[in-house]
Length: 153
Image 1: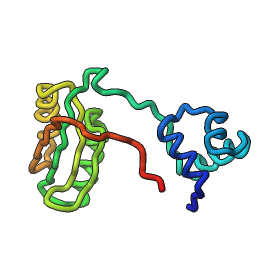
Image 2: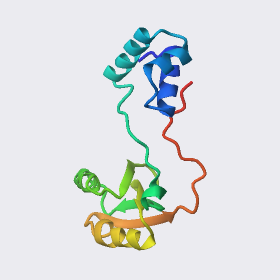
Image 3: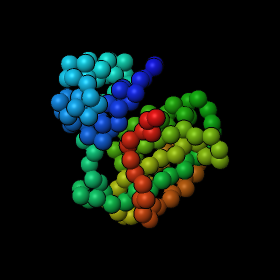
Image 4: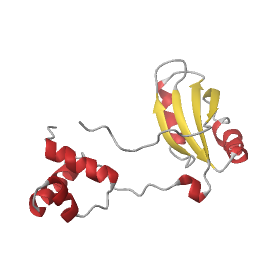
């Protein structure tokens, strides 16, 4: 897809504030409301804008613990990968799961209330999966940068 500078400007604005009004967006990009609206609708219909969400401050809702997990499966088979991925989709504590190359198979981002809650999740949900051979948990001490904004040129 070919995005021009106006499309990119619209995307930058919406990444910062998905509730920005058409009037505010059009004023910022120096385009009238109607073509601005048409561009946003095109970006939505073409799948460039996938969704609009509310970003919640996890600490305000008592989810202060972030843990990154390196997960290694016992056997790297198509069936094990598929089964693991289907199970992981059911765990609300996991907010990100990526299949990776290297010395482990999956990179998970887990959010819980505290260490005790993570330990319960670990022992009762993650470590009991039959295809999991090894889990390495990395506890986040401080978040230096967290963003959902993609680098748009």
